[in-house]
Length: 256
Image 1 (cartoon, helix red, strand yellow):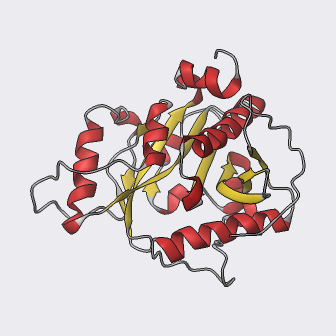
Image 2 (cartoon, rainbow, N blue to C red):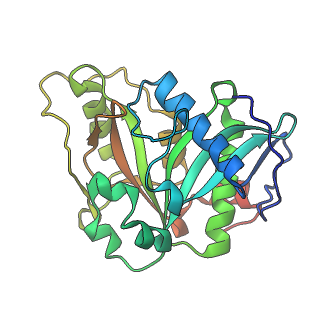
């Protein structure tokens, strides 16, 4: 992607000094740049089937109710990473969270507090490094702090593997340490087919999922099959008061 944009200040000022900057999209041109990057990553690179009415843009009905957090290279003004954010108020207007299309979240959403959903996260192939993820998390942490969100939720994709063996293996491994307590479990609407082969031991956790777990997130239950994206999705739940302190210090510049 080579779109060049001029970004406005959004009140998100990361503590680290970098050519990468982070902020909320403030124009349709910036939103379209994020949707174009999403299309290139999801449709061209991973072969996802996108039900978008706009050629070259990844768009669904939730986009109109979301804010879009962008990471861009200040030297080129190129969008190199993005995620979209759906607040609890935005979800009311949209008819629910995106995660509710894949999971029964009734027990989670019955918990008192403010929810912020993140989704459609992607990074340009040339910028898949720790700095880009750090920039995204810096922006997220600042927004959480500014608006007092109690829970961060979303779906994290994992590879299926042959016969869904890789997805089953990842869930089996993560459930030993990262599964939420039973009262907060979610139920997938499209469960994975039953395991018919030995669990794989050579799986690799996707970088985004590793980032979620690193900052203190838990998985909500069994994965959901996402046939359009050819992956399995895990529901992610992060009580923001449980953000790992060393990461909170890193992202926000002070102890939480």
